[in-house]
Image 1 (cartoon, rainbow, N blue to C red):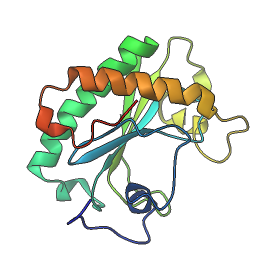
Image 2: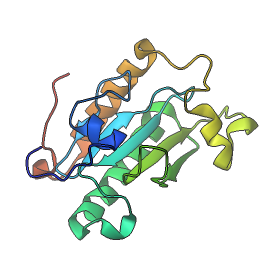
Image 3: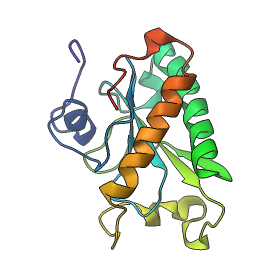
Length: 168
């Protein structure tokens, strides 16, 4: 992670550098521009986050190379969620305005067939955060994260895009 710009007050930057952990599952993938993890705490299996690998707080600051690789990752992550969890849809949300998280990141959320109306559309955020009474455990999320990683590694076309092949 050398030569990266980080903000010491940013939770995403702290997580990228390994100073804090924001998930209870293994990191799914790291490319030169993006990191993919399963969020925690959540009640939604398949709620992933794709985080820019440098501090940036607005989309207009994202480079062409970063956007190009993001497009490929969004497509593959959506396909992985559909293949593995049989999603009906995949929500994609980018706000970068959470307290301590003014850092470009995309929530990619598996909308499952038995989806409760309490999580439909913008209400999906009812399934994420410290208010979750019984968040999904590491025992549930780790196998899913590893299966998603395996899918992504098998389908990434550009070998140069994978900075760290990550051991399983």
